[in-house]
Amino acid sequence: MKQKALTNIAAHLPEMARLQPHAPAVFFPDGRDRGGRIRYTHYTFGQLDRESGRIACALESIGVKRGVRTALMVRPSLEFFALTFALFKIGAVPVLIDPGMGVKNLKTCLAEAAPEAFIGIPQAHLARLVLGWGKESVNILLTVGPRLGWGGKTLQEIVAEVPAERSYAMAETGADETAAILFTSGSTGVPKGAVYSHGNFCAQVESLRSLYDIRPGEIDLPTFPLFALFAPALGMTSIIPEMDFTRPASVDPEKIIQAIENFGITNMFGSPALINRLSLYGQQKGIVLPSLKRAISAGAPVPAQVLERFSSMLDEQAEIFTPYGATESLPVCSVGSKEILSETRHLTDKGKGVCVGRPVEGIELHIIAISDAPIAAWSDELRLADGEIGEVVVKGPQVTRSYFNRDDSTALAKIADLNGGLFHRMGDLGYRDAQGRIWFCGRKSHRVIGADGTLFTIPCEAVFNTHPQVFRTALVGVGAPRSQRPVLCVELEPGTGKGEQNRIREELLEIGGNFAITEGIRHILFHPAFPVDIRHNAKIFREKLAVWAEKELK
Image (cartoon, rainbow, N blue to C red; front, side):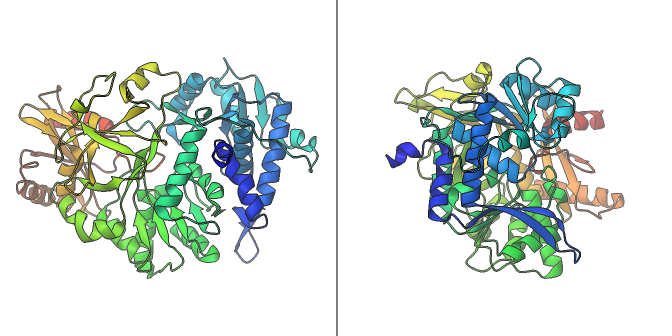
């Protein structure tokens, strides 16, 4: 019976409200007082459960019912938490799209998701009207904040009609029932809507709980909005930081550190770019953060020097974990900073790839031969031996089964398993070592295929990244497939002058000449600032750099 109750991801909230009704569930920044100290508004677990139930009643009154796809375009706020849990309780299907992915992609995503309801702040509704978002499908409009001339109702209006004491009977959704549509970042192509079931979400919560020993009563600082939703389900108090969530690399480190110190944060999530910014500030100011038990960073590999700097701010027992996964499946693997800094970083510097750890419990992971074609059915003959680089494929309860309205993309990414379930092709390349650890070697679409063989981005780049004046590098291929020229694009550390580029180029060529995988890379171009994804500010748009490099070499 307990497992059945948990097939609705929202069921974690009333359970936490029962266990700790007066414990704070979420704090949200609400300006500053005369002394410059930040003020917060908050919900306790009991309040968040009651308010989300009341909102669920109100939403049903305007037609947002079980199965109704609902575009949710609300900034991180108390309303964002309450609305999301309300939609889950109803069994409606929130469509969650990162606003940082760009106007063109936003319109494409909304057209594909075909939502019937649109819940948004005034700016989102204005953009919907001007840009034609969802005009073919949306027939229910709800504004969070003041409504102008676009019709529909406001959240305040519909909730006011529901008595404060009204309870809500949560939908008894099945494990395979669609819970949400989450769009990928689109860092290697057009964003796609991953279809999440309630079972997928519940598996994620349980995996994170057991993997990192997260316990009720902990205090979380989520710097990525979707991760904030896991905190109430895990019984953690969530402290929403003062920041622009679409620009983590530009975060004010002082504000983040203030939040950690003010609340005694025990757990935080941050992109590699944000962790880098915090570590630089902390090193400069000599800051220590004794309350932090763990930090979790994902979205791209975290450089060892960043882990080293940030680790110096933490207690000896604390650790930075770098889970590996994707929107379609998370977590897949995990490794901690202690193992990276004591062992795997040295192999990374020698071109062995980035260690992402061992598969988490419940995940079946294999490495298969590289192919750009669909694979209709699983066969053990696809598997490669340990040490061979191939594509990572995974199967498990947190692995999503399809993309919404993208049958071709689903066919390319999924492999039917005749024994039950399916495998998801991560689109990543890597290998398994003799200890069972997985090493990431880059995206499949980024491999450089030349006349003399194939080069993989991450192992090659790591060799050159050892240069002290190099911030990061990106290997791209110029020319027709199977006859591409490898070109290394280099972004230097801030403050490095153009006059130093010739010397650095020669030093990089010398470094590359020491390794078989990099000795053939002779073209080196310096770029002022790599194009990166908005979501994490860490994934490099190598496709754009390849176009730029081709022009530079002409």
